[in-house]
Length: 258
Image (cartoon, rainbow, N blue to C red):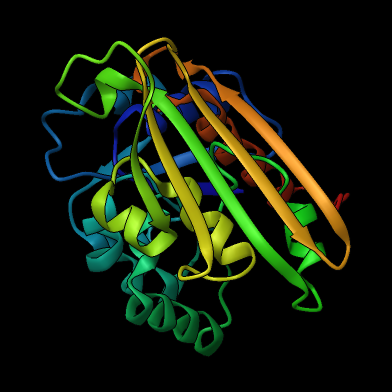
């Protein structure tokens, strides 16, 4: 499977190293869409890819799937064009809190017979959550995210402080770079308005901690995930990066679990 990536940041570099450098079976990144080819020129010789600055030419290149690894703005401006021509793996899922955009992408995927994949990112348990909600009988989804205080607030804290309580839509609106987890949980179950979120700034931790509680007719489930940062970029979750690679390998595989 030939892969095209939108963006050349930490996620793209992780995928290039894991796929092209380590020669993942039947996976190859061949094209990358960037704003500035000179800035990223070394990628062509290092990883054997071709850079593009025109989205039409990028989409017409010899790729089977597009991985969006840029930002929310890129989702708004580029994804409608991309999904008309290719299946898409979407990383900046915070963009989907815009329900008009979500509906547009869903309609385009149906019209052009494309698939839109949303990796699990920094959390797990989405298979259980989706299965539990198959009959619409999940009654509550609550996410408590704890992050190092310095990544959330400018003030110096001595103890943990709750800085947000509300629903997923409000969370991503106020903290667009910190609450993608709430969006994927909402999309997998009860929606943005009913998924409850608490965000805690904690000066005594050095990694992100996500605690999820789900209740419904099936029973109860709890998950706690403590994420290490991506070694090459502390602002990116290692598990989030790995979830994209895992998604690509599952798409390309024949044995589907779950």
